[in-house]
Image (cartoon, rainbow, N blue to C red; front, top):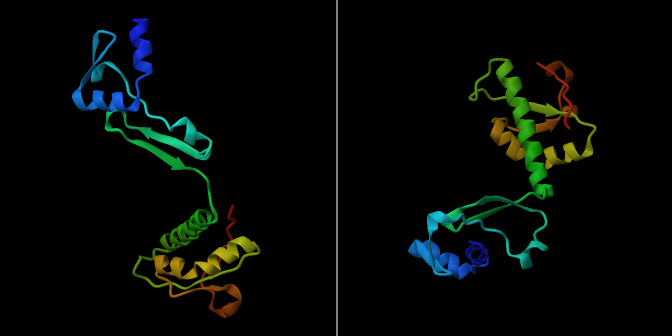
Length: 156
């Protein structure tokens, strides 16, 4: 058994592919069926040091699939998350007041967080389209008499 076990563990990629295609393989004089062993795929050792930030999400066994997730957060991904959070909070306010998606709204914002303000300013059109709001403007552009509802929320 130890000899067969060692031989199975040292199978090359081509041998594993042959096993998957034919359904069985001869190892150390024993016929091994594909259902007798579990195939696990991993990133080649030569590539592991290049992909420290990748996480194995799925090793597809007999399907030959190895899915890797890039867990490194870049600036664009972070901005997208902030945009989604802004949209989510406005949608919750909209729901609280019984507005439906067809209702057009105007959104004004004020923030002391330079990063948040920069993201909103750069992606105002995208956020506005999602909210069906003609524009997102800083609060200083709004007359205090025109405020219908105002709420302060902390963003993390």
